[in-house]
Length: 162
Image (cartoon, rainbow, N blue to C red; front, side):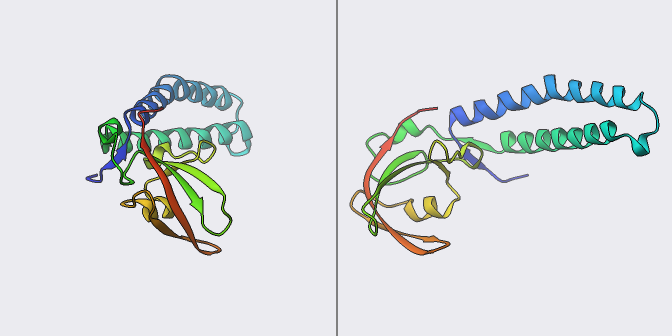
């Protein structure tokens, strides 16, 4: 796979930790569960066995996905952008919704790191794509399911935060 995935150093570390956990804890645990379920007899009507095999498939799929992401990770040192006035990968951006006058903040991160609870959005999201390249004072028009929304960029900050 030749695709590159932008990520922060903390994002790469998080992926590596999850991969290590899946390979060293979850994979052996599910193998044991399958062995125990198999010992219960007829596999055609063995719900424990089928559930364990399904979980094994998920774990193996996740391991493959993480290996691909880690292999294609392009770690970007966002602290190098400190003082930058333009919205770029890694930026924490404060916006003003021009329609409602409400302020909202987002941090633009890699796809793996996105977490709406933290207000961290993927660099590939419509909001991030609409903000990239804007500077304080610019109006960004973001396409949303309810139609276009306009946001004024109030501040741009770069931190190494995890």
